[in-house]
Length: 205
Image (tube, rainbow, N blue to C red; front, side):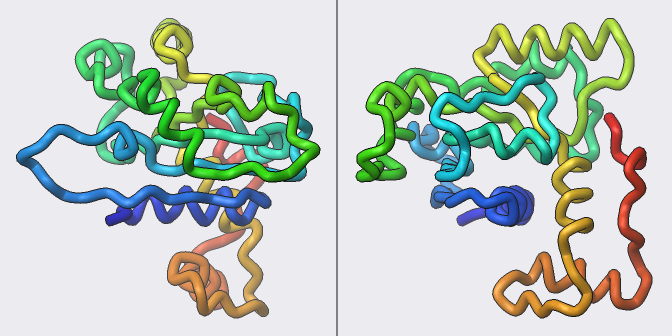
């Protein structure tokens, strides 16, 4: 069963033109996670270039047009401070990068489009994205965190602040979002002036 945080991330990718496969999760404490349960989302943007890849490690909404296929894992540590020590002490952060997990990711979308290059369809061509509350804002903690994530095989991270900012910007008060509880809630909050559209420099971490 998908959690609230994963649903936020799903809404974000769908709003940015991706087809999204959200993987079913089971709350069973007595067994080890299966390979397919390490991944939260598999996303596919048919409008992105075949050889598209994000430029920087920290991704923003403008970078999404460059991402064609990605596996996405959500780490919703909203009340925890993200540090290199957390990465070093929790190896499970990188479980979604194991070879058997990446092999499973290939089966989540079937590509019948003749325009898709077979080389791009290989599991190795997935962009591997981690969703985090934030990165440390100052060095050396920030640089060390990025290096640890890169060394672990992560291709890019996107923060919840970037995701929420993008959702707030794109929710329109004169449009009903009956199929999305999250977007409908954001719309109602904007109607009653409970939230304001974020300033350009509000979420810049």
